[in-house]
Image (cartoon, rainbow, N blue to C red; front, side):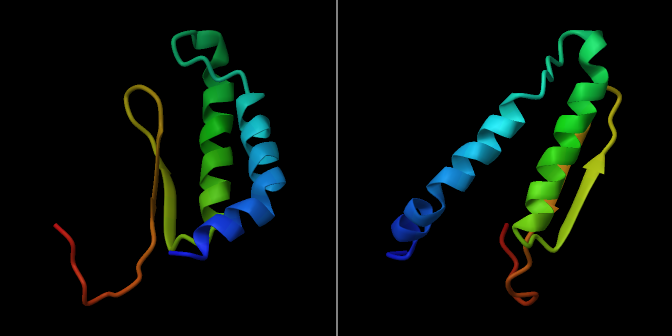
Length: 81
């Protein structure tokens, strides 16, 4: 885990800029006029998960707002409960 801090430090500007891009989307879920922005936020998050190398990502529709799901399979033989 010693590699984490240098990795974060090397990519800090990119991480901050990606967070700023996400926060610029006016996705106020309590206000119906922002419905499309909430969906755009879900797409943004899914894309970042894809970019990070997750094995399976999807936007799951619900009666309300979508859920963004992702998984990273490291070992098919290892199951965590």
